[in-house]
Image (cartoon, rainbow, N blue to C red; front, side, top):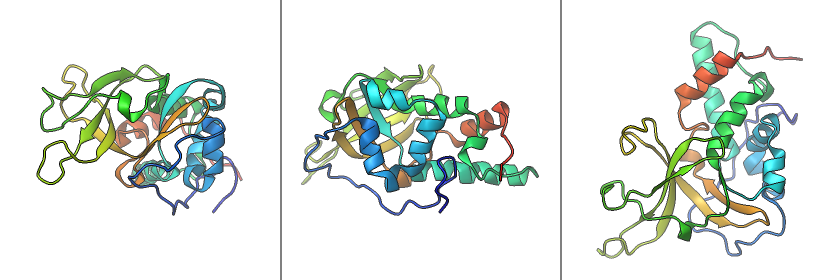
Length: 227
């Protein structure tokens, strides 16, 4: 594992799963919490710094659907496959990708204000008309759908545990078609300046749409690796 703040971290062996936390309150900022859990958020912290958004997580009041560091590793792997296939040099350091790309993609996960799981409406992927969740504007201006899935229990519809989802909408003219649905693994972590909902690492790749991230990175220009 390379320890430089701009190096691609390849280690992410610790994961959160459903069940929440015993004490949701955290006596520190969102950034403080992530630093305390650095083995899990290593590459995510690098992205925050490269995006120039540390102040957002330290001082602003926001709700953050936090992508674990492993999701960043996933998208870099996919980017490198694309680059190799096209005979180009691969990325070995996150700072080879322009800061505006990191800022644009990271902003999709951030929403102004504080929203806990209980504040979001019900969402049912099999019954969107009745339970569509709700569309929210992200920090960067993207429209994302967020809602809570009410699972069944004991044969009773909607009586089971509730799980928060965030979804990227690829076509705003058809906002209920082909959504990229990402489950939250741990919800309602409450630092002093907002809320953290940690996304499921194994079911997500950073940026929601891998091809779009690749296109952005290449279009903005990938810098050569430095020694």
